Amino acid sequence: MKTFTKTLSMLGCLALLSVAAFPQDLPEAPKAQTPKAFWLMTGAYTASIIADGETTLHQVSQGCGEVRSPMLYGARPTAARFYVASALVDGGTMFLSHRLVRSQSKFMRTVGWSLMSFGTEQHAHGAFANSRVSCQ
View 1 (tube, rainbow, N blue to C red):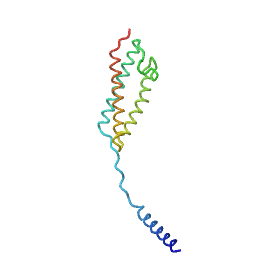
View 2 (cartoon, rainbow, N blue to C red):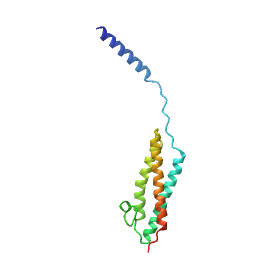
View 3 (tube, rainbow, N blue to C red):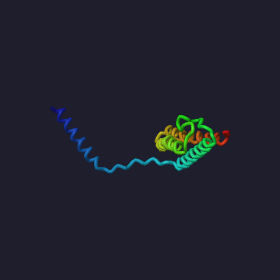
View 4 (tube, rainbow, N blue to C red):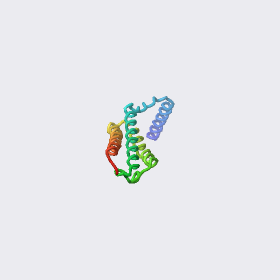
């Protein structure tokens, strides 16, 4: 009987302490900030997508076909198809990168920056390659 009374009194004290602590205003956790460099990188990424798309569409109008991503855009993509596919794929990459760059983990932030850098490089390379191709 003594252990039951002792346990009951300890539970009562615990309940009183938890009720007393509940109404306190706890400070909010700091919100993760998006670095300004991320928005600069997003601009560079978007510019590389547009450059790649416009040079691809120019080459298609000259009689060439899409070589690097025919499964994504089709062999002879239209402007609408290129930009819709790019908006889905590259928009998803930008969204994921934004989430990762704001992470508390240094590794995840690095992955976020790497995704944007890799995408920018790939589209810039595509635009450069398209500008060098001559279709006859």
